[in-house]
Amino acid sequence: MTVSAGQSGKSGREEAIADLHRPFVSRKGRIVAWVMGVGQALAFVACALLLPWSGVDQVGINDRIGLLVIAVFIGWGMSRFGGVRALPSPEGLVVRNLLITRTLTWREVEGLNFGVSDPWVTLNTEDGDPLAVMAIQRADGEFARSEAERLATLIEYHHTTAR
Image 1 (cartoon, rainbow, N blue to C red):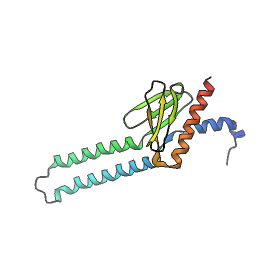
Image 2: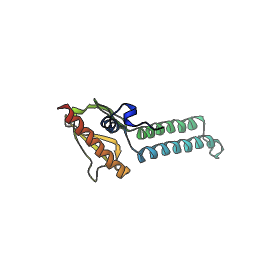
Image 3: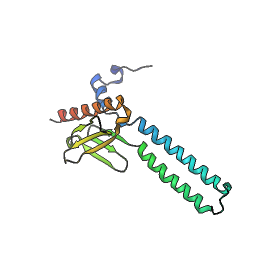
């Protein structure tokens, strides 16, 4: 059963605004990060399990534990790559990059850049510090361009409605 705008209680305009506020996430970057994270974990665990039978005499439990610790750190790093996102709301934008999460109000966002050589969208902020939005990555091709346009539309919408 499908629900039309009239049945759901939302007008077409409200639905369009809600659609604009969908989270921004990378497609290819997220897939690559998770595949690499799982792949390296499997490789390191296999090495840790197979080292005792490798014929190397000086392999101890500490070496095997060290491999597992390295796998955990690499896995954590890959999960950070896979978890980059930008979460818009009526109040502002939460940008989660690799190590830093920053919350901006729409008033603080002055515009964005996404040139042909830029790896991801960069926000122009009120304080003059550019902020990368790694969730919109050049590697995603046409999808990234449409997401950059959606973010630009969101910025314009919130600047227009704030006046």
